[in-house]
Every structure is written in structure tokens, then in C-alpha cells.
Amino acid sequence: MEKLTIEAVDREKLTENDFRGIHEVMQDMWASESWLGELAQCKCCGKMLSKEHVFWHLSKELIQEKVAHIMNILWLDSISCTICGGDTRLIYGPSNVEKIKDRVLNSVDAFLVLCKSDEKGIVGFNEGYIDSLDRIFQLDLHDHYENVWLAEIRRRIEKNLGYFPKEILSMSALWLLKPYRSFQNLFRLVNKYALTLPESRRWIPWLVEYDRGGTTHRMNSDVNRGISLGIEDDPELRAKMTRVWEKYNCDLIIYPDVVGMQKDFFSKDVRHYFRMSKGKTSPHLEQTIDKELVAA
Ligand SMILES: [Zn+2]
Image (cartoon, rainbow, N blue to C red):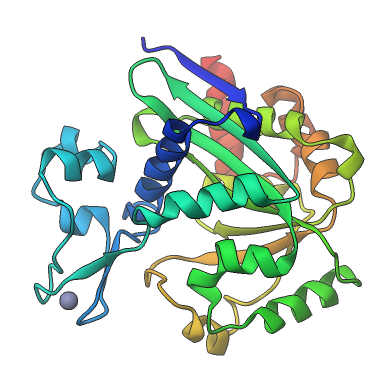
């Protein structure tokens, strides 16, 4: 079996290769139909194209590879629209590397856990950073919420927390490539991340956009400390969201005390998490955890 290491990395020690690796995993995460379906958008007809939509003709093995790797193999530097043949824009193109660097290197603080395989380099990560809402909006939320307005998000955060925080921890992304995806690896990523967060920041709020169908959303809604900003449940606001795949059921959530929550639930082992959240976890997740415990 391929050896996997899951470790927290200081931002000062990240190399150009690391940033590119994170970008490629992130691009693949957003592109996949089983997840968010955001590979490219047609400049002519506006259609959002997923990885499966564009590369449906590839073998099962090849389509599991990262988008960047597939494009390399096929000698592609752009993707044509599968509907009208027009030019498309990659949603997470090469400029995303600069965005990741800006988040990680220029924020107040950044926390990064990398999952590396001996053979394939970075195959997963958990990234978050502390910054002002203005910067988080520019660096993370702008793509989806450009027309929902920063002021609307600000108002909802203030209403739900009872104050407006100067600094917020933004959970930027958490992902594992498909061949490495298991509850155990996911938990290890979350666990290392929880251990990395500084105790001195116990009360910092956390802003995160989740896919309501995903395991991480279930894990975090089960701990019952997050408050949905309700944007996606408001049909008028949902209609204003940009560059969102029509099937993506997202939810922008604020947690009043992320570090406390992460330490309480995720800083020990799976059994501890299970005990802490027992009775609160959804049946699906309990089954997953049960299975993992049996397998462990
Ligand atoms: Zn098109």
C-alpha cells in the first residue's frame, strides 16, 4: 500500500510545488460532478461544465486522475463547451495558485494540513486562514456571492453572532482525491487541523461554505454549533448566486467559537468524537463511523 502522511505545515515552509499541488487538488474538487461540478464555464452560452461532463469518454481509471493531469495527458490547454463548442473559462485556472498564496501568505494567520502520498505528492489538504470579512469575501466568497453583496453577508453575520467580528477564520477548503477518500483519512485531516489551531483563538468565529450532502457538513452540523446565514434558503438570494452548479446545495455557516468546537470534538480520536456527538449525529454518519470502528 502507498504510504500517506498527513501533517500540519508552517506557511513559511511551503514551496512552489506545494502551492501548485494544493491548487490541482482544489481544482479537481470543484470540478467533479459527484461534488460541485465547477470545472469550466462557457463564455458563449454560460453553461457550467463538470469534469464528468467534459471527460465522459475517458476510462474509469483516467477520469479518477486530477483534472490538471488529464489535461496534460490529452495536451489540452483549454476546454471547449460541450453544448455549443464555444470557448470556456476554467473556474479554477492557473490564477488560482496566486489566490491560494494570497490567502495563505498574506493573511493574519493560516493553518494548513497536507495529505501527501509517496507516489503522487499532495492528494488532500485542509486549509484555513484568519482575515477580515472584506478580504475573505475577495479571496473566497466573491465567485459565488458577487451579486449577493458583501453588505448582506456582513449584516447576517452580525445578526447571528450579536456583534461584528474584526477577524474571522475562513475554512477555505478540505479535500481528498477519490482514491484516498475514506472516513479515516478525512478524520485524520480534521484532527490534525484541530490540533494546529491555537488555543488563544478559542473564540474566533468561523465562516464556512458547505455542501449539504457532504460528510464534513454532516460532521459539523452534528456538533450543533454552527448557524446557517440562510442565504441559500432565500430563493431571491439563491437566484443571485454566480458560477454555482445548479445541483450544488450549499450553505454558508458561521460558528461562534470554532477553535473551541474543533478542540472539543476533533482533537482526540474517532471514538472520542463519536462519544461527544452521540445522539446528535445523523444516522448516516453513525453508520459510517460504526463501519470505520469495525474496520479499525
Ligand atoms: Zn456553450
